[in-house]
Image 1 (cartoon, rainbow, N blue to C red):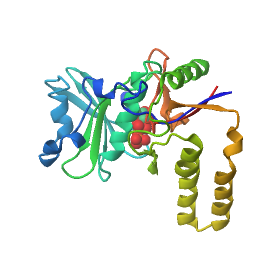
Image 2: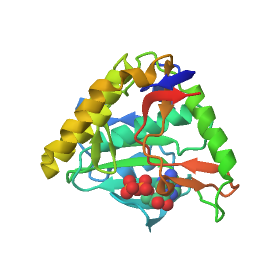
Image 3: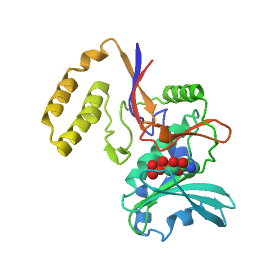
Length: 262
Ligand code: ADP
């Protein structure tokens, strides 16, 4: 049996592209820019790198769980913007890198990320391609096939993990690179969740049982060839849609490279 597992590095063949995305940029890597945060960095980006000369309408978009979402109509097309008033840019950095990684596989449709950064009032924003959703649900077998294509296209040279930690909802997801899937899954997935449950509910029985599983799960993977592949990471029905041509679209990822069973 062949198993692909892991998290993608920006330099891997799976994420090779994020730095090549023509318009994605981050103020995180431009410390000089962080010092002078524009009063309205979203508007500023749309009217410069976004190639618009006029924003004609800004409308709220409902349906999200965590952030405020808006549709910006401009003379250069539409943009989708999410803002968060209290969380810094690291959350949207994770989303931008994840969208970029999936976008670059050229398989399933995902919004192209353009820019993320801090807001002058605290909080942060992300700007991405606006996708007009269709009214009908995408064909589920097409969705499954496209996801499989994405998994296969996403290779990782750094093993299992991702360039940054990200969030599932608002729960942190730890993505420290590891060359060993069993160690990665035991420590950063099961172990991390068990610790959160212990901290929150104080139930040491579950914690201890879980830790026993973590220590004894190696044999489950005997005779399994494990390879890393790119995963959406938070794929539930709320993060799946279809475009106006009925093609599946996936959104709001918490990407990492994990094991893929084939
Ligand atoms: P949150 O981060 O708060 O969970 P989502 O990413 O789920 O927000 O986005 C909120 C809503 O905005 C989604 O339910 C979806 O309908 C819509 N949406 C998300 N991404 C796009 C996009 N790129 N283009 C158009 N609409 C989008």
